[in-house]
Length: 493
Image (cartoon, rainbow, N blue to C red; front, side, top):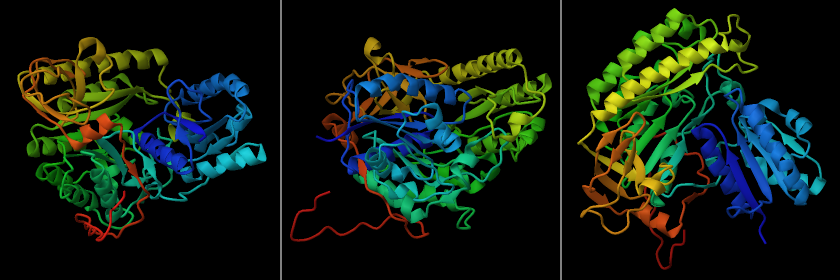
């Protein structure tokens, strides 16, 4: 029988996508996903190191698994991701029952390391300092039948003083456009309707091969792929946001009018201390241009409260920018000191009680703005790509959930004359908004339209995309060429 595996993922979308690669690698090596509730033969932790409690969370989970492993001889535990890159051999010192530790640059080594640890009966720790194999060359078992992640770059060239990611992911490495487009085409061929382009600093794409306008060109080229209905991207940096990207968003029908662009602080003094290479005026001017080109654009952001040295005046400047920006939503964080970052040793660390009070004021302001903007949508029809697992109360409310084109979460009732059979994740519906809450929309009336899709067919059949590794393409743009069908026989995918 095949050995079974389970992957536990923490952190950002990049980690989620890395876990898809890890699943593809393990299945190519003969492993099978563990059944729900079963004890897997291999547990892989794909970790994050951005937040302060990441360490405690990992070691707490490893502690819970220790007695389970004792009761199941042959069980293996592997730890990868950013925290593994940071802690390295410290992990097996603190948790000697861990079998494998691998870093962000060598996720492709996992099956070999597991086999080596089993053969040698000792822990294997392998942390590389630079990228060994670009993740796109690795197979992937995708989680969703209708939406897919596509990494266009890894690493980051910025030096934000609060961020540990560049030291763990390395300097930016860009994939060639032909490589990216080939992977997008492969996902569409598998029935996927939506892709999200990923990068630590997604709109600096092209810096490695010397094309400042590469990201805008890439968006337009994605728009030429038949069957691709939605294109999203995350997360851009204000420093690299150019007018051609705004034009590409506005002029390419499949690119969603959604922008998540981190602000971090509205205080120019704090932005300078963070080494964020823009100021609040520049940030707001980008939003003005985006809204001039796309009045319906939904804009969200990240904000850090309590950065070292932040004064009440600095915080009020952040509130002022939030009022001016009118974000649809914001991911708000209390500053978390991370060892190894310049900000961790700065003087004037803000007291926890002060940070908490400011955080609550910011959240209250943003919720007020979000609620107002969402109430304005009542009575409008929104196109929703039906999803799975987005609505925690769907079973109680008899609703389904999905994302509108602008990224808003919509809970809807799957009823009405327009419904064509069962509404399934992966299908597309048009729903009339009946209520706007701060964090979601509700559409409780009859659906205006329902379109069954190949994604929905695949979801219903339990089929999920599997993409083989995509070898490096040529540095050119345009729709990938369609290979001629073979003659005289059957083509088997």
